[in-house]
Image: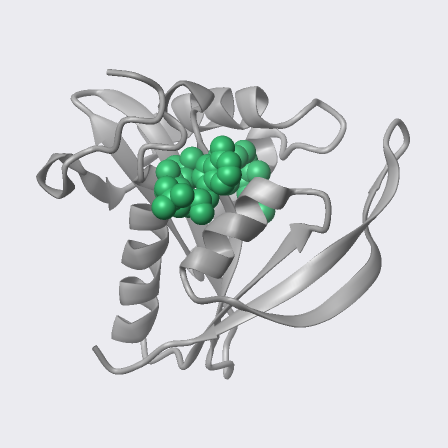
Length: 165
Ligand SMILES: CC(C)(COP(=O)(O)OP(=O)(O)OC[C@H]1O[C@@H](n2cnc3c(N)ncnc32)[C@H](O)[C@@H]1OP(=O)(O)O)[C@@H](O)C(=O)NCCC(=O)NCCS
């Protein structure tokens, strides 16, 4: 399989992450982001285990290929995508889009009307994914991402209305 060969819809396996997946999830986070801007294992564990979040993983056998975390806030009709990471070995095969669609389905089931996320204005691939999935520009947030080594970076906030189906 070449790196851009798409996976058949029937071969996607998406489920909820369990505590024993945290190590594998952190390994993917390390592959996707440099140390100073990525989530720590403790931060990921908190996000995955807290009751107002869900973490979805896509697996091939026992191998975790990707994950996505959604956060819900009391009294809000907006589901917030905290992060989505696909292991670089498995990128560009349709996993990211499929995880996003599944996350939106989970948000609808919880009565959310909107899905929202923030993305670095320099992350052209993620912006292309979100645009393809139907997300629209909402606002620019200046200096949203801050790190000692990389300085500051603006984020684009994107939003999608979740229809009934
Ligand atoms: C962004 C990311 C999640 C996309 O996941 P993915 O599984 O590779 O994406 P998919 O294969 O589902 O692609 C869906 C769409 O995204 C865009 N896309 C994906 N990879 C791309 C690439 N290399 N170049 C340009 N566009 C790309 C395309 O629009 C694609 O649709 P197409 O295949 O019809 O052209 C993945 O690249 C990743 O994990 N990046 C590192 C972590 C990250 O930046 N996360 C986002 C944080 S906000």
